[in-house]
Length: 170
Ligand SMILES: [Fe+2]
Image: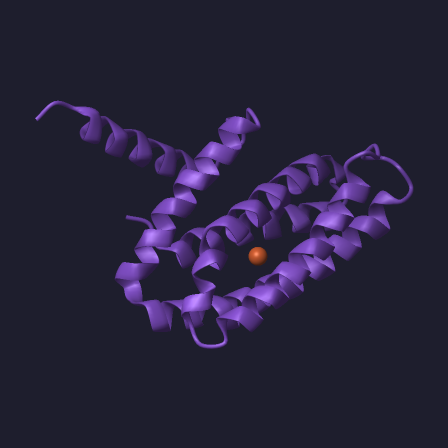
């Protein structure tokens, strides 16, 4: 059982670390940042945001979060066709870092605590499991099985185990 908020926060930290690396002068992280942000925004919209209408003020939170995602996706779409060393990368990445940092802060201080409070730990586990599965699917669809964190490998292992035990004859 995975808690949706915990999984999202771990993903946020992963991207935050890449932002720090970029800010310290390592532009080689740009493709990974773009891929991570695309996967994360896609699965967030598909899974945890889908249950937002069930909580107080959830429609407003969802609208605002999706608007912020659109800005991030637009910036990523400008970055991806450019080479890592191109002149515009710096200002585009600064725009992404600023937007994502603001969005993550709102998600972690408002949206996720509200979801946790109103849905409770049991209900949070249900979008959490779906989220882990959506991430696995999205990563394998993109052929990304390198550079996974220990936690992501653990998620994949747990899902494989769960599937094996469901498929096993009783
Ligand atoms: Fe988000």
